[in-house]
Amino acid sequence: IVQLYVPLNWFGTYYRAIQKNFVDMENMFELMHVDSDVRDAAGAPELVVRRGGIEFKHVSFGYGPERLVLNNVNFKVAPGSTVALVGPSGAGKSTIMRLLFRFYDVNEGAVLVDGQDVRTVTQSSLRANIGVVPQDTVLFNNTVRYNIQYGKLTATSADVIAAAKNADIHDRILTFPDAYDTQVGERGLRLSGGEKQRIAIARTLLKDPAIVLLDEATSALDTNTERNIQAALARVCANRTTLIIAHRLSTIIHADEILVLKDGEIIERGNHETLLSQAGFYASMWQQQLENRNNSVDNNAEGNNN
Ligand code: ADP
Ligand code: MG
Image 1: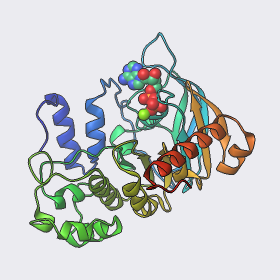
Image 2: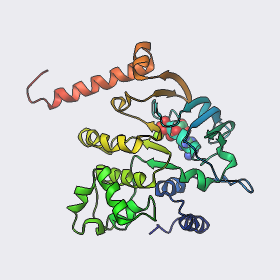
Image 3: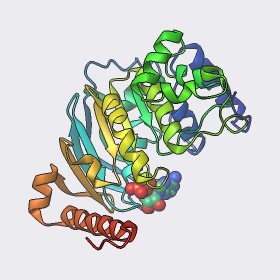
Image 4: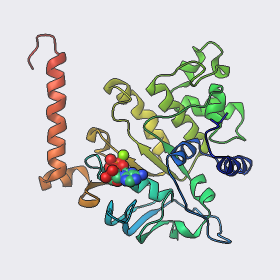
């Protein structure tokens, strides 16, 4: 089930993780891109998650000694609330997600989940409490059922179907040649970007974590698909602490707080209305996206110049 270019010792860890039911496929694929030498502290306890509050406290971080990628980043995500990260490419948005997962340790400051420094708890317990809906979900070469059940290996078939319904993918699955037993992935039925993202949503609903990270698709989904997926995304975020990397600002106008990140620093923060009224960087990003949208509407508007 797993591509065998994963280093063997890593595979062992991964296999034990399955046995402990602390699994998250996204983590595995993310980890393969990371030369992580982060280790659990000796005798580290498991993370105790109450309501899933997140805090970045004066966090500075660089991938190497020559350059800081995050500089004194400070923010909280209150339990059950939604915070959005926006900003230009290279600003450090994905790095914030990686630090929350503790793929790397911070140079200065601390990352806390429900008041516990992520360096003090086991990585498996940390990751077990965080669900991810990534930009581009990689599916296992296995059945649709397995790809959803991966969120919680002990889930029943009825649980899997309920999650698929909540992710608005059940009806689509029933049109596949073998319904839930259809093989997907590289060697099976190829799913569209939107379908894969719904599978990831179903899996996360099944996993039922206190914290959800969304990395909004940039180009993987077209605007229509993206609009249709909003309802399922809203369900996966409901009553969970949510951190979202947003590219389309229209999707985060209801976020409790928006953090505008540029060159590793939070340059503006507030809700959508507040940020617009400040007429700063966020407001100009918003203006830019409105213009882009109007241009594409004009281009598609068969002779109608409105
Ligand atoms: P964003 O998600 O906002 O586009 P990232 O967090 O991915 O930005 O990257 C922030 C900065 O860190 C960029 O300058 C990027 O080139 C650099 N960076 C990202 N990943 C690595 C890495 N694994 N090693 C070294 N530099 C990296
Ligand atoms: Mg990124």
